[in-house]
Image (tube, rainbow, N blue to C red; front, top):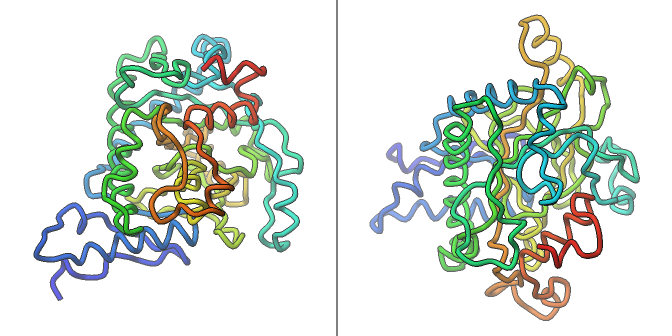
Length: 365
C-alpha cells in the first residue's frame, strides 16, 4: 500500500483524527478519499465532534493570532469597552465578561451519569469570559438581517490586527468548507449542499478571553454547558486546557487536540439541516487540575495568564432557509425542525442567551 493509500485516521481516545490530504489530492482514478468522507459523516453523527489535520494550515499562524489576542485582552477594561457594540447584539467587537448566559439544560443533566455530568451550575450563571467577534467572508449584497452582517470592528493601536485576523480566520474557514464538502459526500448528498448555504454567511472569528488573574481558581466555570447556535465551529489549539465535550450518548470527553490539528463541533444549524441525524455538540470550559498546572507553568515563564480560544463560528447565510434536507427530510424531522430563516433562528438564540435584549430584537435584525 502506498503512503497516500494508508489509513488516514488516528485514534484520539474514541475520536479519530482525520487527515484531509487525500481528499484535497483526490482523483477519479483513486477514490479511497471517500473513506475519509464517510468517517467524517460517521463521526459527526456519533460525537458531533471532529479532529482534523489540514496540510494547508500552517499552525504558526495560530501562535501569531493568540499572541496578538493575549496583548489585546491585557488592555484595560476601559480600552476594550471602546470596541463593544451592544446595539448590534455584540455580533461584532467585544462581548464583556458576564454578559452571555447559556440556556438552562438542567433536565438534560438528570439523564447523565455522575461521571459524565458537567461542572456547570444549574441553572447557569453568566459566563466569566470575554469574546471578540471578527466578521469573516463576503457580505451579502442584500439581506433582511443587517445587524447580523455588520462590518467588523478594528481596535485602535494594533496595525497588524486586520491582517492577522483575516489570515488565521481565512485558513480555518477554508478547513470548514472542505469538511462541509466531505460531510455532504459522506451523507450521500451533493458535494456543495452545505457550502452553497454557507455562502455570504455571517461567519465569525471568535476568540474568547478568560483572565486567570480573576478567574483562575480550580472549578471556575468559564463557559457554561451549552451548544453552539451556528453551523460548524472550529478551534485551533489553545495554550490552556479546560474544554470538555459530550458525545451524542452523553459521554463526557476532555479535549486534548493533537499538535497541528483542529477541532470541529456541529452547531444547531447542522442539527436543523440533518433533522437531528447530527446533533449540536454540548461543551463547557472549566478550570481543571490540568488548567492549574498550565497556569503555574505560565507564571514561572512570565507568560500571559489569559486563556485565548482560537475559535471560528461558521454560519448558514442569514437569508437562507433552515429545514431538513434531502433524505433527512421526513414527517418527524420536519415537525421537530420546522422551516425557518437562519437569521431568525440566530436572533432567537441570541435572545435566549441574553445577547439580544427585547421583544423587538428579531424585527430589528
